[in-house]
Structures are given as C-alpha cells and as structure tokens.
Image (cartoon, rainbow, N blue to C red; front, top):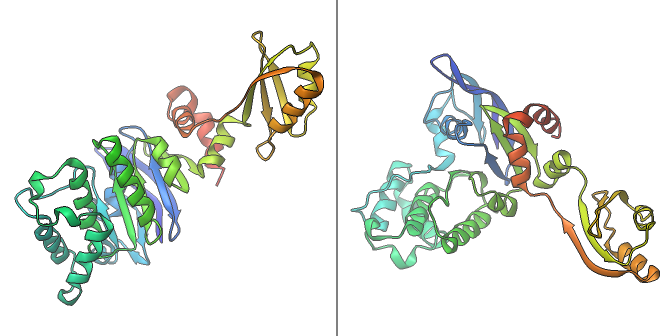
Length: 319
C-alpha cells in the first residue's frame, strides 16, 4: 500500500532524512516513532507530497509521487500536528469546503459528509462554530477533514497532542476503528498508545531507521528474555538451582532480600512450576510477578547516543 525507497532530504548540505526505505502493507497500523528532530515530520510531508524529496521514491496505493503528485494526494488523508482549521466556520461548512478541495463529487458529498460525521463522533457539534469547540473536538474535525474523500491511507502526526486523558482515549478508539478500513501511519510520543493500537513499530533517529518490527519482537530482540520476579520466604541455599531446572528457565538471579529474578524463554511461563515447587518445598510464596519490558525501554535504548549504534544494527536486522 505504501512503498518508500531510499528517501532523503538535505538542507544546506545537512541530511535530515538519509536513505530511508520501508513498506506498509494494506490494512496495517504502523507506529512511526523517533525523538524530536529525528525527521519524522519531514518524512510525512514528503510522503504526502507537501515537501519534495531530495532523492528517493514514494508510491501510495499504486500511484507514484513523481509521476502523479495530485493523484497520490487523493489517496492520502493527512492530519498534521497543528490542524489548519477555520474557527469562524461551522463544522458542516468546513467539511463541505474540505470535500470540495479534495475533489469529492457533488453526488457523493452528502454520503461522505454523513460518513465522517458519524465516524468522528461530530453529530452533536456539526452546526457549531469550530472556534467554540474544545481541543478534542477540533482534533476530530481535522480527522474528519482528512477522511472526507475516503482515502485508503491515513497519515496522522501527533493526533492526541494536547488532549486530556478522556479525549486521548476517544481518539485512540477512533484510530483503532479506522484501522479496520484504512492503512494508518501514526506518529506520536505517547508510547503506551503505540503499544495498544499499532501492529508494527518503525523507529528512526537522525533520519535513519534504527528499528522495525512488532513491539513484542523489538522488546525481545533488544531487552532480552522476559523475567518473572519471585519473592519467597524460607527458601534454602539450593533454591536458585531448583528454580533453574524448571522447564523454559534460562537463568536465575538470587538477590539478598529473598527475591529471585527468573529469566525464561519467550514462549515459556514458569509461574505454575514455581508455585508447585514452592508447595513441595514448603516455601512461603509472597510474590510472583512478570517483569515486562516496555516500548519506552526499547525507544530510550535505541535513541540514546551511547547505546544506539550497536543496537540499531541488530534491531534493523529483525525484519
């Protein structure tokens, strides 16, 4: 659905995006991540035809950017970080204006308008002036404008920035729902959001790819095997050795406070075995908690200058 090949953008001899290549299949929600200044917004602007690349090729839904830039834009719904709205217009008026700009034919206008009003939950405010709406509703109006021509691809740049927790939940649910009918590229700094709704994560730093894969695959590749934290009272000196013989256990680290950190293979879960062993040995089991690395752990390790280089090469080989 989206093909980006060797995409570069140079400003005054400084490459902001440097030879970026990736493919997004139809129906996928891709989390597009990177620290501030990594080149994310520049990539999005080049993908949508708002900024010409220095080198490279972009194809969206079979349309090549160089051959048909207007045709490519019609395949994309783009929501920039700062949504360009007209506060004096009513919601309906703005969406009709966007429909005209996006080339929606008059016979299809009413159907398209009802579609985006319903999908973006704007029925209660459709005749209200945009300038009187909350930030959350304005984000929904911007998203409705990006959807008005029913594009197969949505590119969303920080769609939940500045929203309160309730508004974030509603926009997150909406993006998840839209992912059933559209290919979505989502850029955000809210990493738990990416873990919840994105099937795949693409991380760039200094204009280059440093990781590409599912959140689970990246956690396993960069952080290592999962760990279970086990707290036991009354365990003997041979407890670590006994725990280490459980199926799937890779290593056991015993701390002085009676806590055991059990590293295990990703497809194994030693908790049931630990429970039965504690019963057999008469240990008092006080805690049995999986210690799961987060996408934030992966992101920080990949985009920290001291650690990024050696791990980026390993992560890039994942896919």
